[in-house]
Image (cartoon, rainbow over all chains, first blue to last red):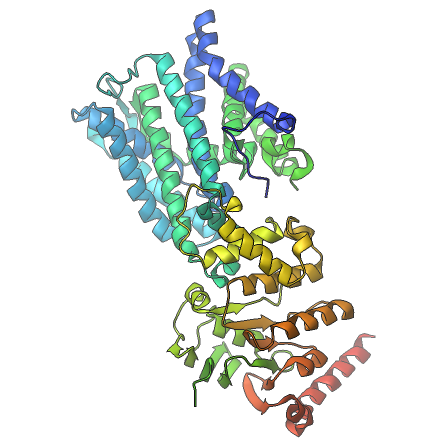
Length: 327
Length: 259
């Protein structure tokens, strides 16, 4: 276990200039400057790409809470992207454009879904857990395909972004970007607090040695379930953002390969490190984008990269920069 | 007469055709240091599993502190005051020694739905944990990751974690397993200090340790209690001698075959 990271409110001390801190700060600065770069170059594409990166990073951060800290390798996490996205799309179609309504429903339904899936799947272990979470996600996928009123397999174009009664105008792409950025920072901070709290230590204890946890008196199931629901809520929020970003929602958003993408981001960035998933999301999506310009077969490059990362980088990219502290 | 702290009657468990516990009866009064011995495969570890609640019996009753706990799950038994150590070290390897014990303290200080405050800076958890570590002689190793501790130190930490839950009954599953003579001696000294305070049920292969520590001894063979009494009486019991002699002969044969 690494030392407790304190992201905010800590005075800059020489020890903060560890490679990991430099990487974290650099990445945050770059992300903060993207809209300025886009404005100067008049290239809106960077803004579009990185808005997506930020949103997927929120999803990856949420998955990291259960997979990295809780040892629950959910292979159905993209379902919450879908639930959050469809909450926005369906409510818009039915005449509710208010973000307060849409996002509350996105978060609420995600929580409910996570509660049901978690209550059933957390009774199983290992491969069975992976298969059950996958099965639930595929169920939601097929339900979405069957929603003819909302575009079925073709998806639904959403006519307007969520409105917040003049509080924020999501149609302003720069503003929307910074909203996503702020929500990402908030999620990272939330997770970094959670994992060092009593709750977080109980969660990590259950990952490390569940049998011992029970023997010393922990009812592990309820803590794992609570973490599962928190992660679902956070990812549902990312789904609502994603639907606003693309003004479009389709079942493809929660196809099983999307869940795989999220897992890859978390593992690539650093399983169980609070900032790792952000690094993973940036790297994975940037790599995918860059390669797609060069070749149709981007998978041929990404595959081996992941393979090497899995073999040589046990702590992910984040672990690489943390030095010899992890093994 | 007051009821014993632990009172087991007719406890039975079969795994397929193997009888691991055959109508086991056991009474351990409060404050007693009780040892359970028996040859390999006698069902000693199964007995600990049954008492701790990890294994559910097919028959019989376990009464603890005046209540029937036969069907109560592991974590609630722990809260009632039943703690166990594991034969094969069972810790949180990626946490520090102090983190390990602090978790045990945390398990017994209310629920853990406290989501914000840093638990590693929570003195209500860290102070008792430090005390428990000091109690087993690991104070200087508090901030060392468990997978960097020596085997002997890990065994000591096993005990510290069980003690940190402030149990009434401590179930020790071969605490000397895999230890050298020096480490074993240190463990015996440590266990002797606990004697009289917490009630202890010890399973151990090391006969010297058992006879040095126990107030009473129960002998288990093929899941059945064949003798029960004070150490001196057990040592002299012909039935017990036969059970052990049999094992020793078998071991000698095995040694000849292998070497």
